[in-house]
Length: 312
Image 1 (cartoon, rainbow, N blue to C red):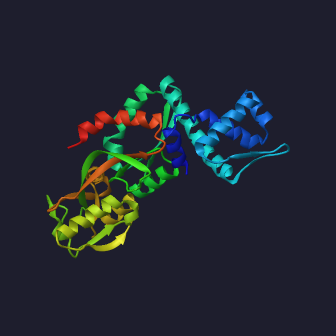
Image 2 (image 1 turned 60 degrees about the vertical axis):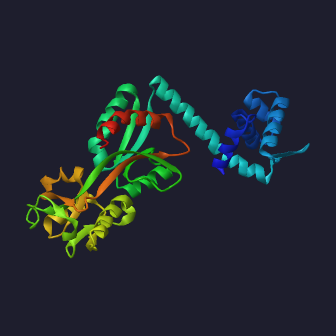
Image 3 (image 1 turned 135 degrees about the vertical axis):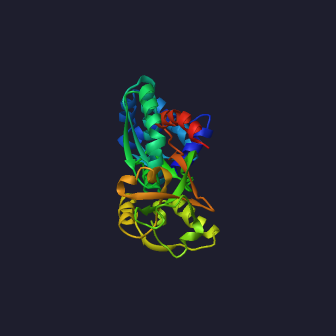
């Protein structure tokens, strides 16, 4: 409903946000005199704004008698959605002014390991140089929980594997990273320069639940299918650190981005490149489609040089 309301307002040549604010004042006060006083308007002007809004929407929103002012059922629904829309506009204005004047703003950012190593440091340094009072909160998570966080409004931006399926989200590919096999130092394959995927047949592998990172899960299982084999899943472990511990202690094979594996030698792990086929992952930056804020725009702008440099 909020989206339909936004489309209506964008398409209209007459409805203005001040009409929405006037309607919300009437809905809260349920008295035209008090609402007009609150908005510093003459009461006839307030009545005219309501009439124009009702004509544009096409339904009666407020019913007024000599003794009572009340919302119609349509007005009750419209109030809820108008409040969300006005609040969103207020946030956008505040964020725009914060960016323009250098005042403090807050970005909540989810990220995966490759983004944290190869994209975010340079991007955040540029963001800090151009907008020094914008604050950031960072959360390392797998793709699934990050996308949930963006949809719920907990995160403003996410750095994930793959393009999100939700129509409520938008994304841009920034880089690609290979997936490698990870084994312990004592594993027979620890000294191999490369590992054809077909050799994984019958070997115990550690994976994770697909909803944790659909693109990575599909890249691993898809490579196995293209090699004509089916993976033997010895267990599902969602935490990458816990996966590394188990791989270092047991004769099992894990999987990781090459970025994470390159920094896991301290855990007693060895990365072995996969070939024939070599699975790859695209890293995307993701944001909400309907309320992309100026702070998000500022981060996306800061990412552009890094994205061009890292794209193969």
